[in-house]
Amino acid sequence: MRRTLALLLLSPLAAGASGLAQRQCLPSQELRICLWQDARLTPGKHGDDGWKPPLALSELRVYDSQGRQLSRLRVGRQSALERTRLSDGGKPVLLLKEDHSIGFGSYAGVETRPFTATAGGIRFAQPEGRPPAQPFAMASSLKSGWKEASDGFLLVSCAPDFPARGEWDGESFRVSYRRLKLQNGQWRLSERSERGFWENEGDFPSERLFPK
Image (cartoon, rainbow, N blue to C red):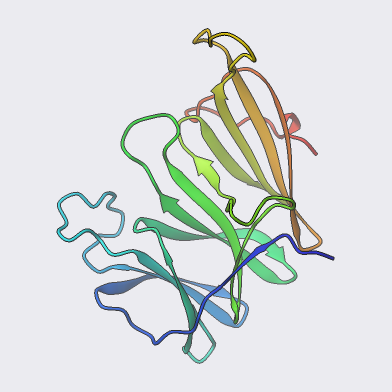
């Protein structure tokens, strides 16, 4: 059965990188997944204005039970790790969050990618049928959001409802309800949409609005 998780192999590299400090570590069976960030970055502080040169990219590193570094992956400067209640064949599903906020606008924000780890690398969630060249991420901004469900994640977003012909009236919007489900080792994405309006400043939509 063809797996739909995108496998990103991380080549083994010598431990240590100049200017980086370990910020977070989460267990994954016999492994540890650790986030290293620019040592100049104050935890909880966002933005790198004023740094010259700019902040170095963060790194996601995989260690074995003896503390040996197996692999590493460069990720966004403003990143964080989180746990979930989900697992894939016993391997815990973790979250990599990368902050792309720019301080204004309705669609820029934090992008979150579910993943699992093995000694060979990181497997990011990639829905079945989605091209590998289009990495999947869950957005959180003024007009998008998500939350964990018992079998995966619920995602909601709101965008202008442009007509097939003519100009947009400036008032019509469409809300998209998507469910990312982990089933038998595969990530499946289903979606429905309807006319409406939603912003990420109130309650998250009821689960009954999302596809099964």
